Every structure is written in C-alpha cells, then in structure tokens.
Image 1 (tube, protein in one colour):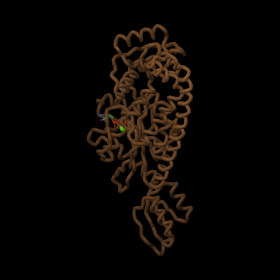
Image 2 (image 1 turned 60 degrees about the vertical axis):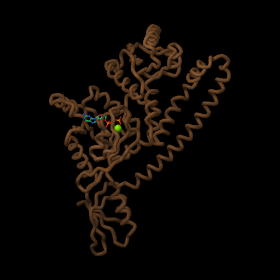
Image 3 (image 1 turned 180 degrees about the horizontal axis):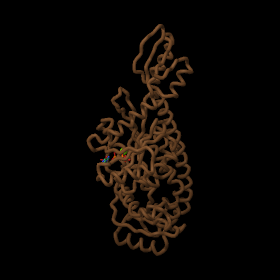
Length: 417
Ligand SMILES: Nc1nc2c(ncn2[C@@H]2O[C@H](COP(=O)(O)OP(=O)(O)OP(=O)(O)O)[C@@H](O)[C@H]2O)c(=O)[nH]1
Ligand SMILES: [Mg+2]
C-alpha cells in the first residue's frame, strides 16, 4: 500500500500522481506487489505520526481490508514517526529512502557496490535501532525484554559503528586504487554518462561502444557499478565512456555519500553527458534532481552536454516543443535515440568535437637521449607519429593543456600545429 502525502504548498503536490507512479515502479523493482494507494495534502506533518489522526485511522482500515503487509511512504519519515505508525498499523512501514536502499542491496553485484550499500544501510539503521527492536519484542511477546533489549541496543550500536569504520576504510582503499588506475590512463579523453535512472545511459553506452554485454533493463537502478568502454570515434582516437548509477528524487544522502568513490570516476571526466529521457512527462524535474545530486558530489562545475534521449518516442510536434523548451532552459543540448538507426550520430559528432577542442594535435620535441621524457610523452599523450631530426625526436600527439604544461616543465618543446 502506497502513501503519498506532500505538504499543501510544496511543489510536489502538482506531481503527486507522477511521484506515486515512480514509487510504484520502485516497489515493483523491489519485488512488492502494489495493492492500493492513499493520498492526502498536509498542512504540516505531525511530528509523532506524520499523518493526522483521521487519516491514520483510514489507513489502518485500508490495510486491514486489503490485507496489505507493507506500507510505503513517499515522504521521509523520522525514526519516531516510522515507529509510531508501525505500532498504529501493525504492519511493516517503510519510507522511500528505505525502499531505495533495499533495492540497491538486492541489486548490488560487485563487492564494492555491496560494501557501499551496506555502509549506507548501517548509517540509516543506526538512529532507528530502537524501532527494529520493537519488531523483535512483538514477535517474542515483549514481556520482560525491555531491560535486556536496551543493553542489546547499546551492544548493537557499538558493533554497527565498528562495522561502519571497517567499511569506510575498505572503501577508501578501493578509492585509492581507482585513482592509481585513472592516473595510468590519463591521456585518453573521458566522458561520463550521468542522469536520472532509466534515462537510457546504459543503452547509449551499449550502442556507441558496440558493446552488447552492457546491461540494459526497463527497471529502475539497472546499473550500480560504473562501467567503462572504449569508443572509436573514427579519428584514430579512442575515447573512454563511463556508465554510472542513475539518480532519483530523494536519493538517500547516505547512499550518495557511500557511492562517492564510484562516482569519482565521473568527476574525473573531461565531459559529463547528462542523459535526459526527453519522452518523460517530468523530465524537467528529473534534470533538477540530477543537478542537485551533481552539486552534492561537487561536480556542478564540470563541463556538461545535455543529451535528450528517446526522441524516437516523440512525434514531430512533441519533438519541436522539446527543442523549444530545451533551448530556453539549458545551453548545450543534443537530441538522440539509442534505439533508432543512426540515432546516436549527434552524440558521436559532439564527442569528437569536444575531444578535438580539448586534446588538440601538437608537435612535441624531445632530445633522443632523454629516454625517460620520451617514455613519459608516450604514456601521457596520444602519440600519432614520430620522426627523428638531428638528434631530436619530433612527435605529433594529442594532449590536453595540463599534460602539455607538465611535459614542458620537464624540458619538452611543444608547438601548436
Ligand atoms: N524508445 C526508446 N527506449 C529507450 C531508449 N534508450 C533506452 N531505452 C529503454 O529505456 C529503458 C532503460 O534503459 P537503460 O539504458 O537501462 O537506462 P539507464 O539510464 O542505464 O537506467 P539505470 O541503469 O536504471 O539508471 C530500457 O528499457 C531501454 O530499452 C531510446 O532511445 N528509445
Ligand atoms: Mg543503466
């Protein structure tokens, strides 16, 4: 049973239907069957039970009538509210954040993703331990458990804090080894796909990189782990394209924080490709959500190209309207389809020109006796060809300004072509 109860004056009240639809998709992804919904516009949530007395009573009847075993709130519940509502209804109660955590937990495949999800879950659980114990008390009858229960909670808190510490340390190790890996492929042009869940990020990677092994599914959060594939842009220049976990409205902060390590992959990119489902009725809200999460991850300043996807679903009029709205709202935008024949050509062209702008071809001169510097040029730049002239090695290479500066500092002569 789904519950949506936004505040009367909030922006969310207009989108109540869409938000509940999305919540239903989340519930479905988590393996629950949706049997009904209850909505209300609130003046302000009650600190004790979120909903008012009358509405809660109505909810209790609905739960009993339908025989629902789980109640999911679209809005965030405080630990106290969650506990009180559960006591009142006699069923398990979850909010959106908890549901998202649950989905991530069942979908995490790699050990890194598992650790990140576990960390977020423990952080979420810590202030809610008392409530989790209430469950146990109920099943055991509750009598006489109060004393030991309290100390048990303390013990649990200690154990959880300890586990959190270990997970943080391990994730830090992962982060560091990623950094080392990244340093090794500094020369390649890197673009990262970011965007709302289900926008088509993985589909784009799959089609552009001709990588049929990339997982695509019409479900929320199909992708949790970043995945990088090489794309040949037809200029003898490879670019690296990385797929990332999708964002969603009210993505739990704990989750964002613990996915920071994997998302750093994206923050290292030369260019962010913000993929937007142009056929979705609320794409503008989704863009706002993605921008908020990017800001939270300190990636708001990165160069962004807005990629409107799924345009094959729009007729000519709708596409025209989308062009107009996009032109008003954002700077750089392209319009693509991951499934239509040739639908991704605008993206390939945009990547190629971004790459050319950021990695111009230059001439690098290094003394032939300086084997070390020569090796470094080959490692950090994309060398197109080289020839020897009077004891000087002349290389034509693509490199960015930062690399050029570094090589100059070590004695290389670099000329624009
Ligand atoms: N019609 C149409 N469907 C598309 C297009 N691109 C993706 N899809 C469909 O949209 C759904 C989601 O695609 P994904 O590529 O898994 O989306 P994602 O952004 O990677 O989603 P998450 O990994 O869940 O964040 C799939 O059913 C795709 O087949 C497109 O251009 N047109
Ligand atoms: Mg995906």
